[in-house]
Image (cartoon, rainbow, N blue to C red; front, side, top):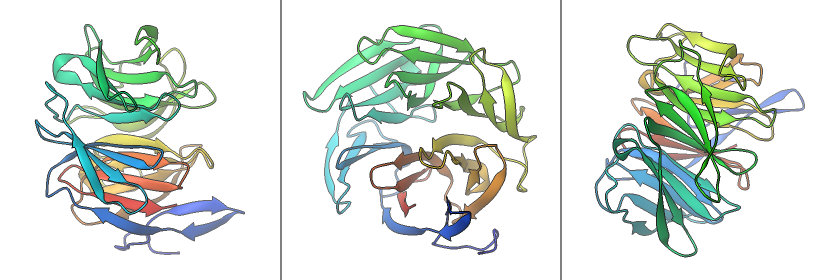
Length: 286
């Protein structure tokens, strides 16, 4: 096996018949040093949310990663709080707009944008639940909000345990539990398994740190549906961590000062996309 401290282009592992197979980087998409604030895909299109005020979403072909066009979303000014996700069933993409306390829903077929307000909280991380509703991770107050994919109405709210400070993103598992990453300069930096009452039942990390038992601003997650392994964007440690379904450390990779900030797994192509805070997207074949 490759030493965990070694810089490599074949970066992750996959559990297959109790053997670990190294996977590889197949593409790096340049954003001309424009920071990435979200990555997602629908069918044969890849969408990248960029840190700029116009033409905020770059659209690429998944087949050859050629840039096709940009989407401009009036009033959206991406910052560190934004995220991007998609729903293949409903053929739409969602963007969080924490500055305006809203969610933007863009219908890919109709080319129409609608707005869903999030009152009294700042929406940040986004994901789609197993039932295809939208899960919004909110800050101040720290909670998970599930919105109906059809109407945008609140289905449920889950107040997070008090020591989950500065939550970045939550993902609902098929078990009904949630994986949440969180951390700021004065709090714990963890990935937590959270129940339906917002209580932590298992965690990884603790105080901010650099070794394999600690994280430094875990800003995003991706869960592999096949293996249930968890990828973590450990942003300020310049690495992506891989955790087992039981929250045990498996491996990490470094790729210089990349600041991995947003993650997305395309289950159809078995590809992991790593969006970097300072720009560019790395494509990894799992």
